[in-house]
Length: 392
Image (cartoon, rainbow, N blue to C red; front, top):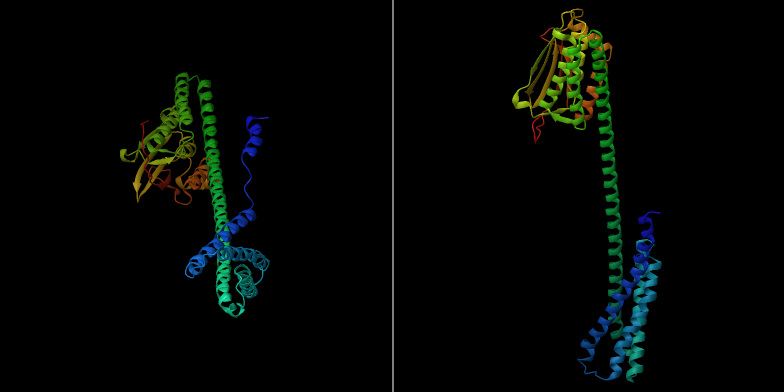
């Protein structure tokens, strides 16, 4: 058993359970009711006893006893109000009105009887009207305060319930947002991880081919660049968005690896304006586009070709282009048809999915003819500036 589990019973013993709501309401009722009737006694003393110089003990005792009787009468009156609380409003109001009048008249009778018994004054029933009207005022005030406090408590409970419900809804919404974000991150990671092994297997096959052809220096160069590229993948692997200059550096490592493979058959042209280097782009975005250019343009051509990668700022968007000079075997239109029929390969499909996950529909991925003679893969994404802490 863990320490936390051993401490739990003692914590429960140290923390008494909260008081039930009924007990809290009863306590509040007794406090307010008692305070009110004490106030009635004080008001009666200063408004009647003092002006009429009634300083005898009997008058003082009557003052206290009538408040005590009034307090006791409010107990069955409260029970009546609670009994009819669930009734329709009209019926509840009618019964409350009748009960208040009856109890106030009863209190007036008891007050008068007590007064005659305690002060020895007799034949005061002719003054009953002067006793009953203040009684009606007191009990109607009591009834109004009772219903007002009751409705206030109900409103407070409803407000607390609404706050709890709103808090729960916010928590559920936050959990849903977090779940969606986790799913989105998982999808992005999965798509990115599909790219790295694909490139790694191709590179290792190329290294094996170079070793078989006894091109040891080229194999060493390719392995060295592969090590740099994989080290970069480990360092920046968790970053979904990276500065453009880092992306171009990683792409240059990849293309130089492939350049070793094709020797002098592939020409590279990289154009990154210095003012765009800090803009953010998805990690490993350009590599699958360059891979398709190599696969469909450079590899099938006996004389090789050119790959041009450029970046420009246009209409508040970052536009990236990967172009190739095409294949001697196929024209540009046939290249586009072949890419369409093959589903554009896993690299292009993953690139489109990654862009969709990161930017929703706020991106473009186009395949058009290139002035070089082959295809032009164009990606347009929102231009977002990064805060650079250190340079590559």
